[in-house]
Image (cartoon, rainbow over all chains, first blue to last red; front, side, top):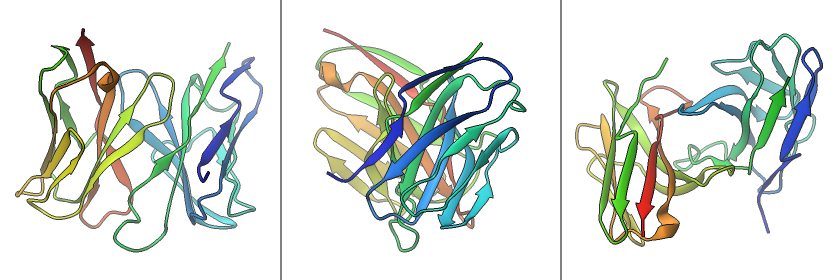
Length: 115
Length: 111
């Protein structure tokens, strides 16, 4: 079955530690995205990538970093510079061009708790 | 900043009732998407709309792309317990590449 996987489902870290969240897709999508979700709020875009070895900052990129070494993978690192890292993180992917390129498909999410 | 206003923020209904929710903006949109999110899971795409006035159904769900291109509506008919969750609208503003998301409508159903 094609889809997006995120691991782990739950992640706990101590303040001051960097942590990397995994996102893998086998949908053959070119574009991948990372969003942050806080209670009672909509999704906010952290980073996105449209092609291997290239990515762009979203609306709240400060304190985060990404890489895109393979088409299938788009890991997100939450660094110690992120002031409020506890949140639910969602990865998504889409095709790159055409009328349906704005239909984004989401993974199951990773809930990060930093204490 | 937030460019989509989604309402209502929450709904408490009886099983079998119909549900209506909407998203509005001051900006013109080229695409509207509706998602459902179950607790602790990622959003699932329900309906995508691409033309002003477009009306699209997915089972008991019907969504419309407003003719002004500044709003969209989602209706759920004859609600059932598995409809519980948070419904998000998302849209692409004319000239932009990224999606913007509404804050969500939390639907609770009393059996």
